[in-house]
Image (cartoon, rainbow over all chains, first blue to last red; front, side, top):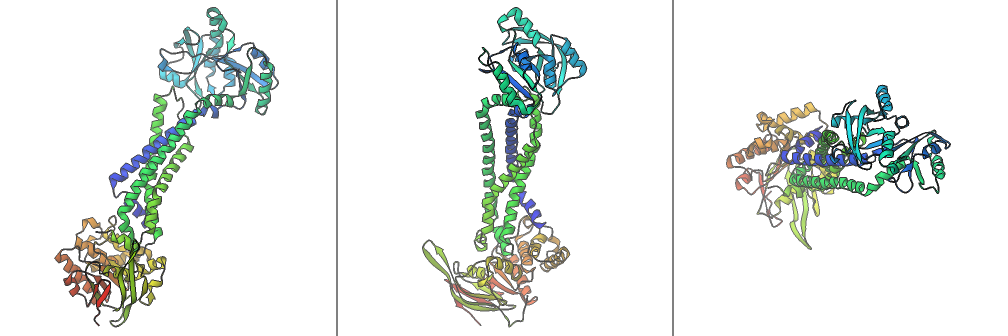
Length: 385
Length: 232
């Protein structure tokens, strides 16, 4: 009890120094938590991918399309439950700053395959019935103030022209980490327009999504699908949705590794700063430690006092940093929602933050604790005066 | 622990100590031998570097001798390990420092209570002991004050209360009046004299101040690590 009281009083003896150290640790923990969350979110698509969905794309590259005629042949492969398809539309709303992902899809089969996009039955029906209808995620709708019935015009980039849509539904995510920023419309609308304007781009899709009855047979089904189109003009590459998402993420692996390294460097920097603070503190108090030893207190008592003070200061910084992480994440989600549709701080990140703060405190305390533990009473007392 | 006026409480024999400076060994104390009787007020005097503070440190068990023995209340402290010495100090030695060495974040009460935290006394017993010690040094009304809120003389009185709180065999004082004005110094010396005459404490004091030494029953002079004069 006494040691605890002593640790608390010592920690706040130099209020400005403690305040600055706590703030320094808090900012480092905030940065660490945000960067770790960013890296985690980068892999969110991979984490949230379904084991019962496969994705088939052109074997050469995703930018090359596949014929619409593949749909029926894929459906006939043993183990395939359902097939849908989509194309990246790449439309722009007013200007490039207003980015959001938009796809031309086969509405019914696509929504059946993606139950995580939740629509009311009425909105779903309205969307299916209207060829120029579109559904949009709640976050994008909120961002632009769109309501059901609103008319939205997207400027085509891959498919030139002004494309008019009527919002027929606003979907919500079934889970907290479901992307609520996407925009879907009828592939038929795109295809029929292309037949008139750019016929060579018609009857093509960007990718197929395959629902499988048994996820354990995913590899076997993938092979069977790809075998169907071997030696054709558009050979396919079928993989699990997870592998498909991973292929996107792997393109930016170097960047993610760099961000991860930076997150660790931030911790190392604050570790050095905290270690310097604790070393200064211990140097100032050597005579006090010697006095306490002269009164009969042992090296272990002194070690607990020094170590405890360091842990207390960094734990306070950690708690403050974690506290700041939530409003910061909320700000990112609201202000940068187009880039980070979900910016959720996971419990694992919180624990990691707190662990990092305690690690900083522990490492920073090693040298001063050792000095306090080993200081000889006579040597320590000579420092007075 | 107090004893009769004739009982030898400290017996120092053939004590030597040298410090190493690079490759050289610098002798600080050479073959020192003398006794201190219970209830004695002893002053150690000598010029700077004569070894008096080193002798006091050895006597208090906070430094180790190269050769010789220091027997205090029947225990040869030169034979104790560091951990044993820490335990021994807690019960047998009270320290009074030139610069008081109070812990700044603790109140006067808490500073005096500090050595008792290493004993098995209950909270209530500790409180009673501390209140008694503070009243003896006339600082009951300053119990809740921190050192920075006390004058030098008051701080030294708190330090004396802390030194005597465990009823140690000896009190060692290193220049206890060195940082005080004349009046405060006089008060502290009177208080130490009272500890000896009224409570039978054994006090060993290092001082440069002849007026302080006058209060002692016996004065030992150290010169270049040698004891000059050991009166009976």
